[in-house]
Length: 526
Ligand code: HEM
Image 1 (cartoon, rainbow, N blue to C red):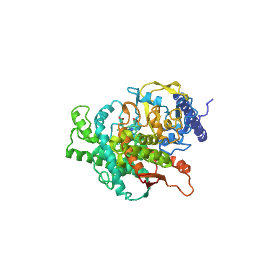
Image 2 (cartoon, helix red, strand yellow; image 1 turned 90 degrees about the vertical axis):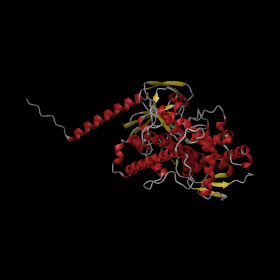
Image 3 (cartoon, helix red, strand yellow; image 1 turned 180 degrees about the vertical axis):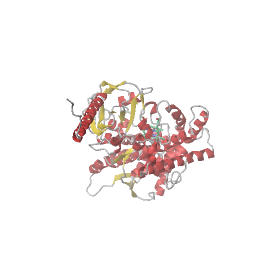
Image 4 (cartoon, rainbow, N blue to C red; image 1 turned 30 degrees about the horizontal axis):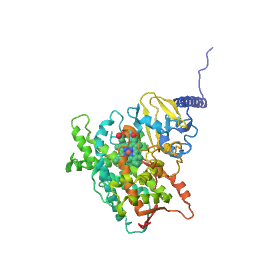
């Protein structure tokens, strides 16, 4: 007897495909959970490491770039150790997150078997490799060229340029003669301040507050190009370069902005070359010393190409201002909520500077409470929210539990682990009373040092630059003004703070969106 040919109706075919898909996803999900040692954590349709998971905003359905901020109160609550995970049900690989300083130090220590992930490298490498955007094998060449610029002379110049820029800003904005005024967008002002500082001290570009850094090319200025590129860091990370050329307006704008940026940065390099550079021991800016260090390497494998120079200049300009500007704005917001901290800072400034004069770089080490204000602002609002590493071989991390007792955790080769600086900030084992703004904790030598600049050989090269410029600006502002909130009718400080804390965005730097503050001139006798 002949058997009838096997036929499938459409509904059965669809149901079978669906079943296979569900089975496949269930198996993948189980495998992902096993990869992260079945740690408790969060499951989303798309994991943090996928285009939708990263591009769509943070919500209860999607991790987004701000996932660690949105869930900072609860992310580690159910985990038996200071490590948690995110797994995607439908797409994206599993990832781990840690809020432990001990684990961060293990991962970032010299010769630890951890390296950068290609996606994070891509976000800051639109012009190719640079000191940030390189893996361990390529990185030493870049760091060797960039490092000589970061020396004592630079920091003295950062201080004096901060003072000059402060007065120039007050005069140009016409705030100088006002007994009180409102800064409508604090983040924009602190970001501009930080961009000016890195332009002046990094590249010897002498600017006044009403000038733009770099000429306008095709109608766009350097800060505008930064805004476009920095808003697109995720796209830069995940998208192949050819996709920029697609006829999508946002992508075209990004393509255009990165081309303009390249020509402005190349212009800066050409101009410095034309002026002639020197390895002169008096040279103060980072770029002169970078070019000089590179000149010494000429002809050897260590020398950076022109494109690598462009990429490093871009990186220093971007990393040097987005992060510091955001952290400064956060510090000012917290200070406005804490008049007692302002008063303590004011008393310190008046005890350190003679006759209320402008503080000098010699005063930097004595303005410890003012430094503490910035460190506390940066702890609470880490302008680099996370950074990621992957193990280059199977490895074991020793992860503390809630009591600080360490538990071994196997991490397979290639599994991304996120160093969660926001999670660390609110880890009560490490920073008691973590939600309170307490600059004085930084005067206590037993406080765990700030890790927001990372740790080990790839620690932020600009950390002292950032601390010096921020201390100088805060010392001047707090000497001259009381900083106050601009409250709506009937709004309390607590209500303002609760809304402000989450009015944030993640780009190259994490921090607050636009917010105003009121400045009232102090009478020196206050
Ligand atoms: C509050 C301000 C800042 C914060 C929070 C910050 C944070 C960081 C962090 C966390 C890293 C390590 C990233 C990683 O390895 O994945 C880093 C690296 C870096 N930062 Fe900063 N940074 C700040 C300011 C600056 C400034 C002012 C400059 C330049 C003047 C700068 C230049 C760099 C460079 C070049 C690297 C790459 C270092 C390397 O890999 O060798 N940063 N920064």
